[in-house]
Image 1 (cartoon, rainbow, N blue to C red):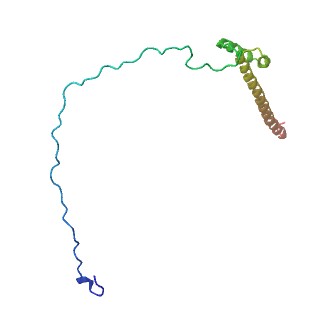
Image 2: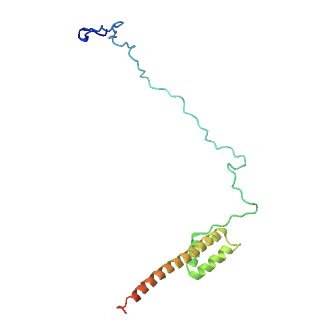
Length: 155
């Protein structure tokens, strides 16, 4: 393109291609048709498994948990015994005395001793919550009583 000439009569040259594209229109070639073996499959002999128990060499598979020397396992407390202890602890003064005695005892079953400690903690928490609840109710009632007494026409 040259400058200074009228662009309407300018012609651009046609693009040049190297060669025309070629296409493969032939059908794809396949090998011969597949053949199938209609014979029944054959299997090897059934696998064999060792069903014999492993030999015991006199040592346990897992070691027993370590216990201090001379320690004995505490006997199990049955359901009936727990039922009776809970019944005994349900009486306010008797239950508190039993909980203190059992928690402080050194000859008692350790399971029962720990359970008595837990019951003693629950008793103390219940007493603390009782005091907080009583003080909240008494302060609320005193303010209601003061309000009633302040109204002159009721009394």
